[in-house]
Amino acid sequence: MSRKKAMSLKCCPFCGSHEVQICRTNPQACWIRCDECGANAQPHPTRSGAIDNWNRRHYDDVPANIANDDEESG
Image 1 (cartoon, rainbow, N blue to C red):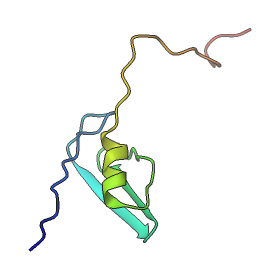
Image 2: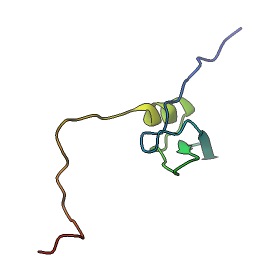
Image 3: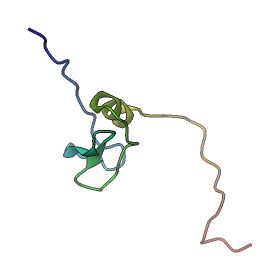
């Protein structure tokens, strides 16, 4: 008998919610969506790939460059 590997989902990287959905609109589009803030992960053809995309985090100490700021006039 085969057993599916249990996959765990991290909380939302934007709002911290633990309420997320695994969404699929067709056999080649699966993604994770936060119920609280609506954030979506990059879609993937497989469920495990979608979970990997959701769980991937990039942490960096270097601040982002602001390309455009609507509160600052040039």
